[in-house]
Image (tube, rainbow, N blue to C red):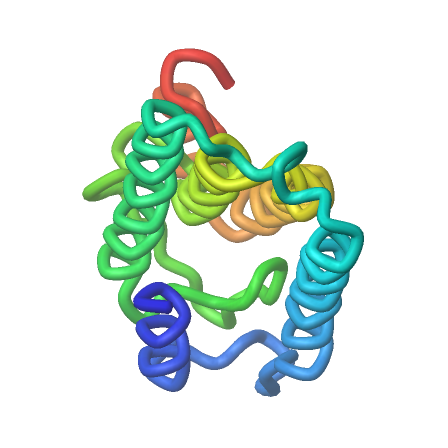
Length: 176
C-alpha cells in the first residue's frame, strides 16, 4: 500500500511524455487485470478450502518472503526518489530525457522493475504459491519494457547510454 500511495502522489510531478499525454488508462487497465486475476485465484483457493495446501505456514519462509517483499518495495521507492521528474510510465518516452545514474541506478539500469519483481517473489515465498501468477506475468512484461526503454535511451543519448550500459546490470546486480 505504501508503494501504491507513493506512486499515485508523485505521478503528477513527472515530466510529460513525448506524446504530451499520460497513458493512464492502458497502464491502470493492465495493473487492474493482474489484481483481478490474483483476487480471483485467492477466492477460488478459499472457496475450495485449499489454503492448507497452497498457503505458506512455515515461519522461516514467511519471514524470508516478507524480507524480500519489503526489500523490493524499498528498492522501488528509492529508485523512484532518485528518478524524480525523469520518471515515466513504462515505455513512455520523455521529450528531453536525462540519464539518472545515482542511487540504485549506479548498479542497476531498471531498479524499479527489479524492486517490483523482488516484492512479488517475496510474496510468493512468504504467502502463497499463487503469487507466482502475477510474477509470471510481470517478469516478461518488465523485461520487454526494459529492452524497449533501453532502445529509446540509446536513441536519445547514444554515447552516454552505451557507457552507462557497459558498467551496469539490467535487473539483477552481478548476474543480468
